[in-house]
Image 1 (cartoon, rainbow, N blue to C red):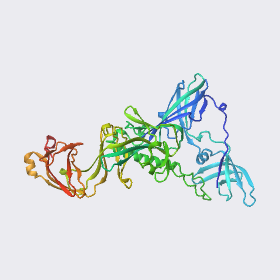
Image 2 (cartoon, rainbow, N blue to C red):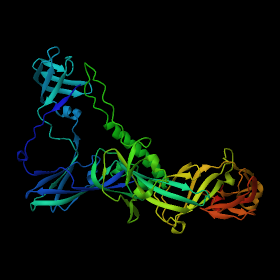
Image 3 (cartoon, one colour):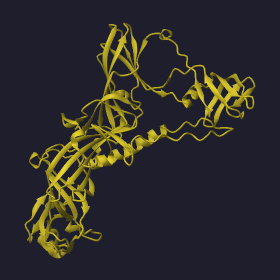
Image 4 (cartoon, rainbow, N blue to C red):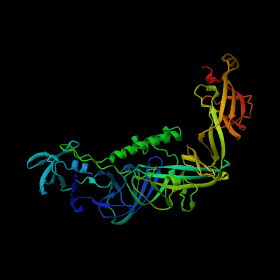
Length: 548
């Protein structure tokens, strides 16, 4: 096994000219606020002892993905002159690269006798092709002698750091100990919400539990941290133009679903970047191939098999989905208003280690009032081939206190289980977007079985429509067919897309209403029976469409 021995010789502070450097090795306390946009606000409290004159105050152990322009230091009682993020990480590769032209000691073990021989050399080159040394015997490549050998370094280059370091330069001022606060933004953090809903047998109530799953994708670990997450849409600029968002400008997205897709893509790119940085160093090329590098450590969190730390108790992810567990050991995250956002605070300090995920319950609402029905939507004015004639199974509910809910629902995935005498059955899942209090929620979880529609659409005559000033027209005959042994409620939605908002419904056979801008009918379809709906839809010609 090839080893690199690092012998360090660091000069004292007195060897430096002004200003004096004061190093804060670690934080006394830390708070991590995670946003959905792949970053966190890290706030550290540190105790430092400042001299009277100008000083470079260095904070060791900051997150390596820190955004230097976001760093704020308060309570130092000094003028801030300069700040720098110094993190050229100390690795075997960086040590070799930074030591080119410097002397090292080669230690070789002779075969047979086992005698250890040492000699001096100068590193001439170090790259993917290998390491070249200049010795008393001439130039040679490391590991071309055919015998075990290693390098010992006399010193470590001063600009290499074992840990990330943020440095600020302060003007002269009153000396003494101070408790200062360092705040900064850092990429590499994320969180998402997951919901577990258990539908009661009658289909009119459900038990709803919400989970926060937060991720630290960075190399930084936090001990006894106060952790919280923020729900809501922030106004952000793209990181490519000096902003904070890795997913792009928030103004460029029409809705939350598009932003979520961009976040997911950015997260995958971030993971790939971090994984590439974690690859074992490829130091030894040249004459003899290096042994196989050790396997990369497995991630600490694998939703398939690994355990996760849940506030209040330890459980597997699968068992966390079991809503019949005793809730005595579960502690809910505390929700707080944060301006236009919602903040969920874990109820006590916790460790948030590198590459770790944690979960906490943030919502527990039993017996929420729901409606279980079926829904089918289409546009009769643009009806053609490829139509799917299978309605969706839908659970809907009002996010109101009167419905036993009335809590902000951050966007996330909802999994639906059906309670039965033989145990809970998983019946579907889907995404929901942010849902404020007093707004309706529709959750489409499956395609209907034994329920379908038969639709006949007859377009209007172009000549007659032109004579009547009609842009478009269609006569619709829709028959809902129910092969189930029970009656069902089927909602029919006549979609209205851009440019068709002045559409009219003429002579409907059933009473028509409006829903989310569409025309809508509620049909009660009998067991093993059918229900007929007929109507005419017309799009009047307007001044904007005269030229069409």
